[in-house]
Image: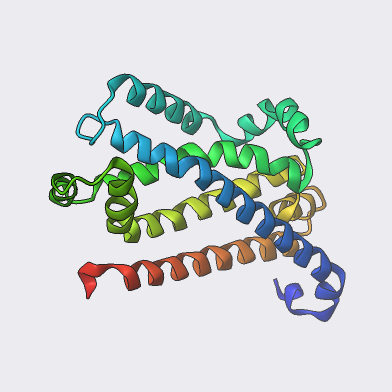
Length: 227
């Protein structure tokens, strides 16, 4: 362990760790944005078309729920391998940072949809009924009632989603996606450089702690119930 505090270690592996951190940040950032572009509308549709939603539709709700449940049921590494041809068709490769983003998005979007659905279901039904009684449209209720009222919960859900995507990037590293996971596997496992494995694990822990702390503070700051 003491090896990680030496100049020799950082001289040999410092650049690799910076590149791994950069690749992980790119994968997490792009995948989270794209997954939310898919998962957020899905979550809204699930709550709107549910039995107690403002636009109940059993067929649509069941189909969406079925799709989301299937997406959440597939282990990420299996999904990544199963989608390699689709990924190559879409972005030209199924390895590296670019190749990891497609399965990351497809895997994370259903998870995010359920997180969003859960957050929106916590909104007081009385607030929704009041908006309906004033003639608000479905879009207005979603945009001005559901999302603002559920924002603290959505922010906390965002931290869970991003940390989940971060964990997926580490798994993706096992089949050449790059990032810190790839460094941990290549150097920590195949080359038996235990100090490299330790540093990558510590970096991932620090990243998780920073993400969770930031999102917790943002959620607390915008929560009207705490004012």
